[in-house]
Image 1 (cartoon, helix red, strand yellow):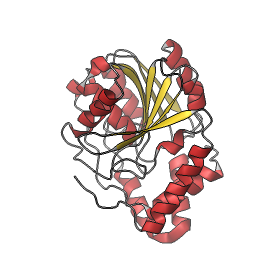
Image 2: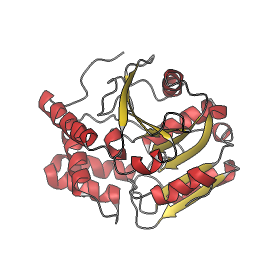
Image 3: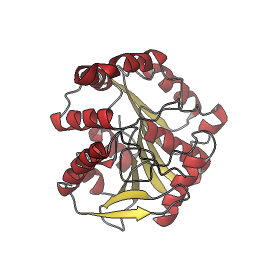
Image 4: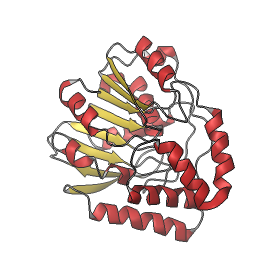
Length: 284
């Protein structure tokens, strides 16, 4: 298990963690923090909402941490016990371990989290790599997933290499280049300045994981018989929205899908679509 720092410098790590702590200090609902041992290392969890309420697990995307849920958690915690989980190997408070994407590692990791939280079944909301992780677990143990919400998921169709090349070209161009990448990721959505600054800091100070998320087979995706909500931006530079919707519509019997006009890869302001789905099984 890796113990190598994933940050470019100790000062960079401290700066990112300082912002994380400032977000936690302003968390909009009462919360507890948990440190869960798993076979792939410590996992940090922010728990909000009534402990007796139906469980909801939030999985952020690559290059971020659970601080990104601060604007949404109050709406989710009104009806759920919400667990915002820091993915391992990302710039949060979980272990720096990065197990192989191929094979069952991430499903087994989330299975350990379920076990520690004493969850027989839960609803999952995942963003990008977090959505891929949710899919990994849901295809591994579909009977333990009540509902599934996927925002711009990886692993459904091949990612666009053109975007990855643009990132490689823009990355060495300092803050200007990072801002251009952020514009591509957010599309036409208005972006809070604090979020933009936080993601810019992570981009500058964190060693992003390189590689391509493996695709799920038709046989795996056909296991997803639970109610599923798919949201993806029409202007997503990384993933083809129409192709993802078409493939999932052909394989998932209880899918609700929406392509959001003008939105890029990072989706904002989605609770108005997700909360009705969580409550009644419809949304979008």
